[in-house]
Amino acid sequence: VLVTSRLLPSDTVFLSDRPTSAVLLEYGSIGSHAALFTREMGLPCISQLPNLLTTVPDGEFALVDADAGIVTVRPREEHEVIFREKARDKEQAFYLARERAQSPAVTKDGVTIPVLANVGCRDDTEKAMLNGAEGVGLYRLELAYLGRAVPPDIDELLNEMQQTLEAAKGHPVCVRLLDIGADKPLPFLKFMAETNPSLGRRGIRLLREFPALMNVQLRAVLELCGDFDVCILVPMVTLPEDVLAVKEYLTNLGLELQMSSLPKLGAMIETPAAALSAREIAKHVDFLSFGTNDLTQYAFAADRDNAAVERYFNDAADVIFRLLRTAHDDAPDVPNSVCGELAGRPEHVSRLLQCGIRTLSVAPPLVPIIKEAVRNSTSTISSM
Ligand code: PEP
Ligand code: MG
Image (cartoon, rainbow, N blue to C red):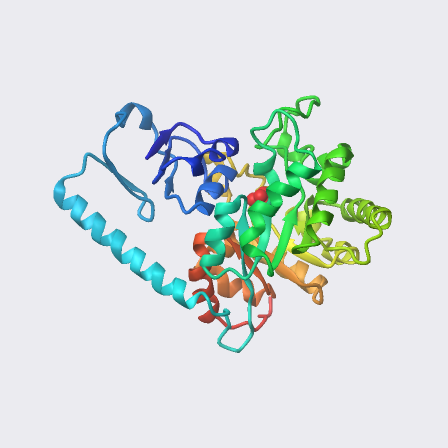
């Protein structure tokens, strides 16, 4: 059990190499990248446990029940017995759902909803495919860049992508261009410190400023097209010109490399401005993918990484569903998906489908229960 004060996204890179069973944090909020990376790895994680480092002695035995948010240090024997029974029941329910997860998720009214996975490394994709994912809806490239002194070149990046996506060969895979900035700074990018980095150069804004980074990524993705069914996602789109910039770059590369077809291009809708401009943005892309984590952060002006404002960070609030629904109604014929954490919460699946969402992409361990939630839902789009 890793007990620490805070977990940075770059720290999580090293977690999969160690035999970690749970993570306990003094600080951190549910929307933070570190929290969602641990969720993707299927690692139980509890945050906001003040004075943890002074109360849990190093090397002590502890039981972590992340569903209930309870940590028991030095448990009594009867506690341990109850805990192990609960863990076994949970494991059995999961294996049952996993068996059913190999079949498509069809709503009660007969609509098939593809359930894909969010991945960052090879382990994630392997786990996702075992759990019945129908492809990769969001490949976060950040892990390939974090913790490095220099950015990867085309071959290194291509090799990393091939390894990460190997288990999903033959299925659609969506590579998101680097979404760096804010809580995920890169040591080798030198620019003036920003007082409010979440509102500064993030995602596509940064790539437009450092086209050499975009160039390497697009060339690596185009190489990947030979072996994989790839599409490209543009992170942190705010203006239609954000996607147009990538489209132009991609078209020129396609001409240079004499490619007969180019991968589909999608926009991440994760700012309120983008959600309310879906009609305009959709004219330039093949699909939209809603990043509800950032959409919530920007709609509520509440830093997703700041536990002190967590009560404002409500990704299941009516406001968020209204933004999704408005974007859908403004671009009803454009394929869409939700790849934010909201898609991984079974209790909200039905409402997402009622907003017109037709694909879900979730952390690998959640695929089976989300498929079950789809089967218990109807797809009828409700009136607003
Ligand atoms: C999101 O913002 O919902 C999203 C999927 O992107 P990330 O969590 O990587 O910012
Ligand atoms: Mg995001």
